[in-house]
Amino acid sequence: MLISLLRSYLAPYRRPLLLVVLLQLGGTIASLYLPSMNADIIDKGIARGDTGYIVRLGGWMLSVSGVQIVCSVAAVYFGARTAMAFGRDVRARLFHQVAGFSAREVAQFGAPSLITRNTNDVQQVQMLVVMGCTMFVSAPIMCVGGIIMALREDIGLSWLMVVSVPVLVIAIGLIIRRMVPQFRTMQARIDGINRVLREQIAGIRVVRAFVREPYETQRFERANTEVTQSALRAGRLMATIFPVVMLVLNCSSVAVIWFGASRVDSGAIQIGSLSAFLSYMMQILMSVMMATFMVMMIPRAAVCAERVVEVLDTESSVTPPSAGITELPGRSQLELRGVSFEYPGAEAPVLREVSFTTGPGMTTAIIGSTGAGKSTLLSLVPRLVDVTAGHLLVDGIDVREIEPDALRARIGLVPQRAYLFSGTVASNLRYGNPAATDDQLWDALRIAQAENFVRDMPGGLDASIAQGGTNVSGGQRQRLAIARALVRRPEIYLFDDSFSALDLGTDARLRAALAPVTADAAVVIVAQRVSTIMEADQIVVLEDGVVVGCGRHDELLGNCPTYAEIVESQLSAAAA
Image 1 (spheres, rainbow, N blue to C red):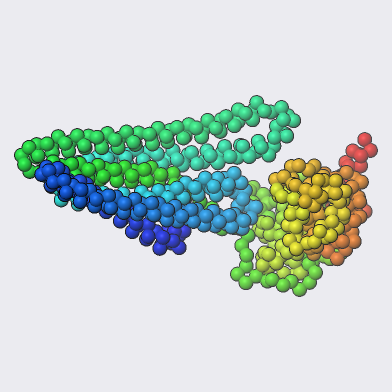
Image 2 (image 1 turned 60 degrees about the horizontal axis):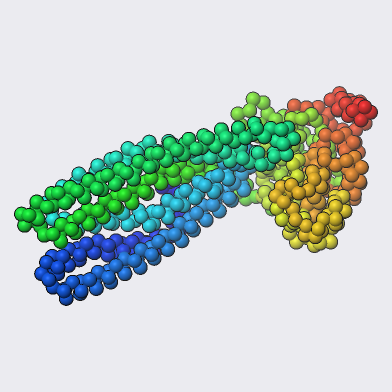
């Protein structure tokens, strides 16, 4: 997964990566040349007392060091830019992929996990690319070059490299093998703590209202402890790597000096060459250590890449047609023919054989007990999820044959949970129509019975709205969401229990103001209150996902026991 992700998203940056490799090659060759020059200064300059030779070669060493510095800085610069571009591209692709998911896929992954994958997981892979451009490229060049240069100085000590390098590689490999499962567990537990924290922040008022702070504190502590324990286990393993590297490094240095001393004494090697061999030995082991730091990051990056690719490879259950229809012939006649919907793995379908027709100038209401499938039915119209059986038609065309943007452009949806985005009143209303004028916004607010409280807000249309609309009341949030749909002037209005937070007077005034605006549109209302839907042209009664009644209010009172029971229970409650 990691290799395929890197190959796919680094492909456009072949030239910068090639430049990084060339710069690292130049810098590493310069670094490898320095010990050899230092050996010459010792053997041919210091040993012979030739000050001029020392100065000349010292000047060359400064020049070579300058080349090394320039190449290294440039390689880090271009490598970092490439890594940042890689992270940007992956995050953008993830965002577009998730934006195309249906409600089914979003529920499958969960919002906290999707956020973690688009932030923390991408960042881990991005850091691997940064380190790869700076360390992983230079490490093999330095290792191979160091071996060649060390053999040039003295072949007799080369057996030390044959022992030291494999020992270091095997020791690090054993440690990393145990780190992989820990990183996989840690990423899953980061999802968990994000989920807990998200729920607690969103539900802080409920937590305080029920005095559940101690319970929620313990719940967060459990999730936090699980993440900490996983991080500690991975950290302990990671912490052992550096001492192991230093142990092998120091033992190798001692061995070079120990066995090299006897070769110097016998005249097989000069002191300068021994010094250069020791430097090359350190460079070889340092390159292995640099590769080790890279390898330390690979397990976690591999786990993160798996999670990222899992999202990228997940196809939405709502797929656009290959040659979708973009122009509809009529004025949005809506028809359901034997529509059924079932979640994957569910014991029973949410909706079964639902059929009804509505069209321009008609108001269709859907009522039923909690869990009857009302909101699910409404989400089928704009294809937030797709029917699993039957047909849902707009102007006689199955919605699965219509281009999604063309379909949704005709629909104004007011969801059950009225959600507002951070910004201003105007920016939220213009979600419905970015080109809407201020007069159009005020007109929509007037119809939605929101004009008065918006005028009272500091700034009016420019008044600030917090994320989720948390700085306005539930009723105000609903009215702003209704106004947002009205700004669009769609041909199909879908109100998903959108009047539940309104008092009866505001509800009545709003519906009266809506009537002339929606006269030429198809209106579908999901409601719990009978008073909201009594005047509807058609009322569909759902029970356990099945249509048990369809008609006007008076008709259903006589021939639909379920509807009569709902009406009676609400009238009894009102009388009490």
